[in-house]
Length: 124
Image (cartoon, rainbow, N blue to C red; front, side, top):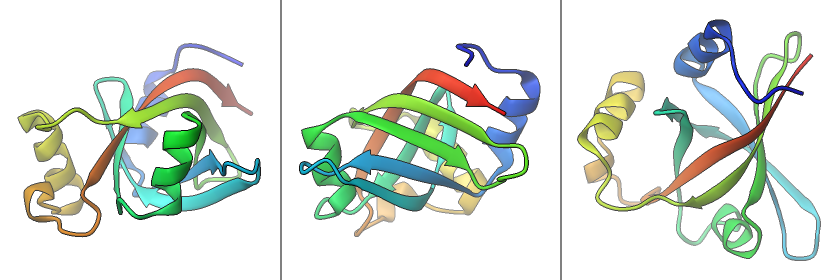
C-alpha cells in the first residue's frame, strides 16, 4: 500500500483509455464496470448516466475502487466519489476533449460528472 504515486503511474493514468470502476450496491453487492476517465489535478473524473446503477451506488456509498486494465502490473486505487461541482473547469473539459475528442458540453446521456479522490493506492 502507498499513498503517493510515481511518475510512471501518473503516465499510465494519463494515457490509458479505460479504467475499471467498482462501487457498492445498497444491498452490499459489488458493481464493476469499465469507464472512460481523465486523471486531472490528482483526481479521477468520469461521466455517467444519471439513471445508472453507478450513480445510485455512489449516492448510497461513496467508497469506490478503480483499477487500470493491465492485469500484469496492476494499479489499483481506493477512493471517495462525489458528484463533481458544476460548471466543470475549462482545463477538465480540455483534458476530456484531448484524450477522447469528447465535448462534454454536448453530452446528453453521460452528463452526470463524478470526481474520485484517491485515499489509498495499491500496486503489485
